[in-house]
Amino acid sequence: MDEPAAEEDTSTRHVVAAMATLRRRCPWSSRQDHRSLEKYAREETEELIEALEDFTAAPTSAHRAAVVEELGDVFYQVLFHSALLDESGGHEYGHSLGTIIDGLEEKLIRRHPLAFGEDAGEEMAALEDVEREYRRIKAEEKTARRREDGNR
Image (cartoon, rainbow, N blue to C red; front, side):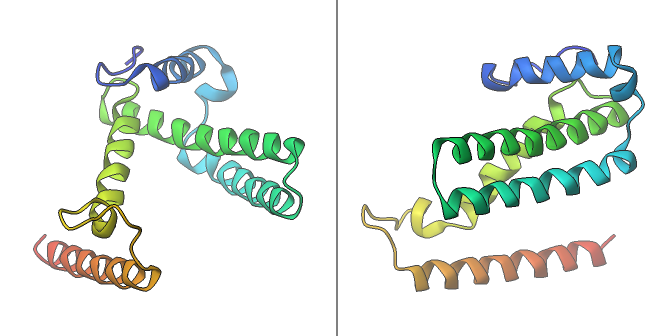
């Protein structure tokens, strides 16, 4: 589990490898689990929200840099938890992160047919239409999940 999964592209391969090294060589990182990281996920999310508020109020380069830094800290939480999932599932590091990214891409496309669907035009769809479609699709997904859970 020390090497990044083969399907990882170069934009994430290095950070996945760095996370694998931390899990092997850093006494703090090697002792963490999902539960111990919960407080950090909350803290980093709160810090991101504060940085976004500052940037919205005054979009300076310093506030932009703070948002970028906080986004990195939130991403670190995603990276860390995905590494823990890889370890518990016997996968190479990067497997779960790739699954997360692929799932997000599929969700973005699935929930935005007015932007990605066959009928998507070059013009931006009306906000009301986008919101209506999004709510409809999300409700369909929720119903399908309930059915799926009922069949287990």
